[in-house]
Length: 358
Image 1 (tube, rainbow, N blue to C red):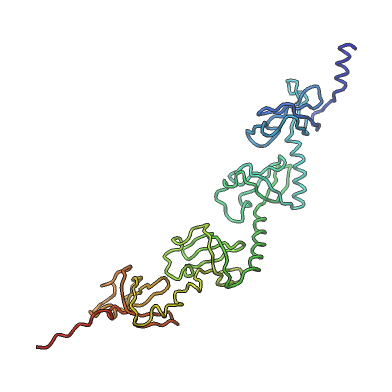
Image 2 (image 1 turned 60 degrees about the vertical axis):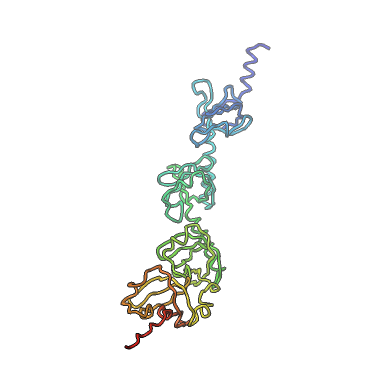
């Protein structure tokens, strides 16, 4: 057999290919930025990095191995150097486009990793097809900084599909809204007034704290944070803090919470501790012109009338007392029903003996 006839037979055994054709090839070498394929043609095929993946600066050696097979599209039969220029990404994108069209029509929930955080939203890639999720559709609450979503896997649905204009829009917000609605329904079916539940502090304001109960937020008003006096909610709690709270009231979708548990009510045994005649110690909490209010313990205040401060004449409490001052006094009146206690410092003073007349 002559050498010429052998070459003719070899060439006759190789297939012919055309631009735009889909062919299958086997990986025979992988470099950082290109893949070399045997496609059964007289020349090897080359898949560049940009024609394999949308991931910028990807190292193809970590993504493809020798021996792998893949379907590719012929871009050029001869790239000028006798090699065939191929694209894996375009085949995957065409398949992905069809897959996404079906997902759009069926309202299928998709999952993908965030590939880019943009000024106006997030970009994800499904089967080499880019999907844009606008910032307004990323969450059901305002998100000032989207960078926290980088490289995170998120769920979304496709709400607009127009591949000709390269416009495929995803929506994550509606999934979160639907999920919260379901969680809220389950929560309200489960909880009742008087229940003790677990929650997480979500937001703190001047008047209270909002606690996430897992489906709905409850308001823990500043007046329900303690049996004692609360200067400011931020001094008591931090966002993210776990709390065990009492459900005080449920009205429509509003939940009122409390940390004033009945078994910790300081007035339960106040009648014994602050019986008339008992000598007590307390801290001056606030003052008015007619007297001073003394905190005997958190949640239990007593009135020290200006006339009971001293046997000497006192014009106003601020003349002889200071906020935060610890004083001793005698209980002169106790009303447990109205939570009122009256004190007297004068009652602890020794009576002044009248001067003997000459």
